[in-house]
Each structure stands twice: as structure tokens, then as C-alpha cells.
Length: 137
Image 1 (cartoon, rainbow, N blue to C red):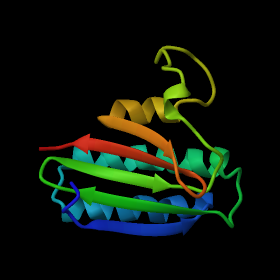
Image 2 (cartoon, helix red, strand yellow; image 1 turned 90 degrees about the horizontal axis):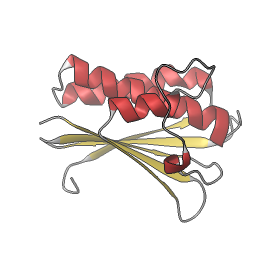
Image 3 (tube, rainbow, N blue to C red; image 1 turned 135 degrees about the horizontal axis):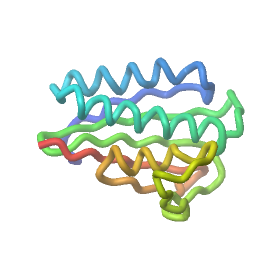
Image 4 (cartoon, helix red, strand yellow; image 1 turned 135 degrees about the vertical axis):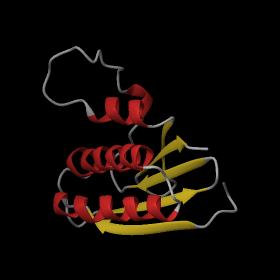
């Protein structure tokens, strides 16, 4: 996927910016002619991830920034989210039983269900990169 152009948007870490971020990702999906179901999955997973970053990684600090990077080729669609939060390892989040009744903790569960790959890694300078891939070809 390294030869395909990457489209990016940087937003302040504010919950009110989720609408803008979702609209951006949806627009990129449309430019790649993804079917509605695939696009909806990508947008929903991205919204959950951004909400987690804003609430947990940035702890509602609007001066922090989040960069959203989208890239697609004929076989997959990738969303990378770059934050400025404390180190986070998505593999440490337990896999939930979908029948379990509890408040919260469903964001990573949804991301895992909606996307084909979910990987997090610390950034060299500060923060994390969450990479989500949806195969679509």
C-alpha cells in the first residue's frame, strides 16, 4: 500500500470534532468507491477509536492533536490514528464476551469486529499510532 496516496486530517482532541473526522473518513471511502457496508464499518471503527483517544489517551485535553491518515488500494483500506497520549497497547485489552452486560469497554471490541487488522505501537517522539485495516477487494 506504500504507493497509494495518503489523505490526512489533523483535528484537536475534542469530542465535538468526531463529526468532522467521521465525515472525512466517509468522504475518503466514497472516493475509493467502497460499498456502503464496508464504508460504514470503517467510519464506525474510526469513530470508536477517536472517542477512546480523546477520552482516555488525551484525557479530554483539547490542546492535544490527532492526525487521521487514510490510504486505500484495490485490496484494502487503512486508517492510521496518531495521538499524543500515554503509551497504549491494544493487545493488552481483553477480548470481551459479547453477551457480557457492562458499561463501557466496547470500543476495542467493536474495532476488532469491524476491521480485519488492529495494531497499536508507540510513536518515536510521543504518543501512539493505531492502525486499522479493512480488506475490501
